[in-house]
Length: 199
Image 1 (cartoon, rainbow, N blue to C red):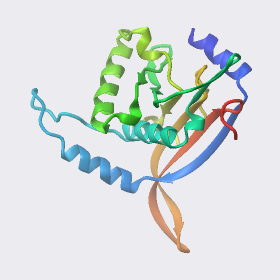
Image 2 (image 1 turned 60 degrees about the vertical axis):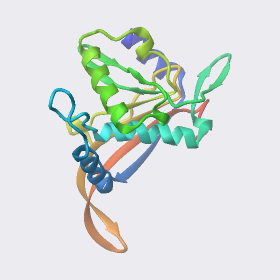
Image 3 (image 1 turned 90 degrees about the vertical axis):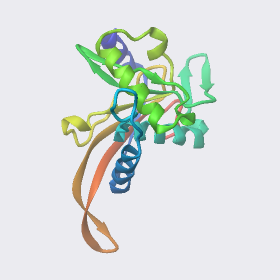
Image 4 (image 1 turned 135 degrees about the vertical axis):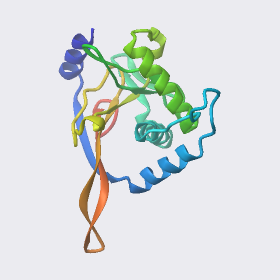
């Protein structure tokens, strides 16, 4: 099924690619503060542990809220505009990927997204996700940063209209006001369906 959908996506969706380098030092500091503020759960461990990927999912959801023209799915019968940002998150499983969907991510706190993703990832690898948990959504996030991948372009998961490929946050030289400084930079590439999202 995964192979068939990938082939369908590349043969039928006019992909466009938009790449940006993002400085994430402030994001890394914010993540540390959020995680340090986590209360103890019933098991004695922190109640949450927010990842950079959780923050990307939330940012993507807020971006779709702010740009509703991109919060769409395409079909031959017409374009469907979504009220909330339901974000699929690619999870590696044996033999491929599955994208459980964080519903209404635009309304959820980072701690909720984090705990939901942890549960999804564990159940995805155990093949215990329900179809309703990995169907739908208007976009997805695919993160290969943990493998040291600097940059890549992901394949859209139809009928979604986009997917954000997230690379590793790496220290790189950048120019600020004419001076070379070191910053943590993360490269992201948005693959979008040009029929639905005007490039």
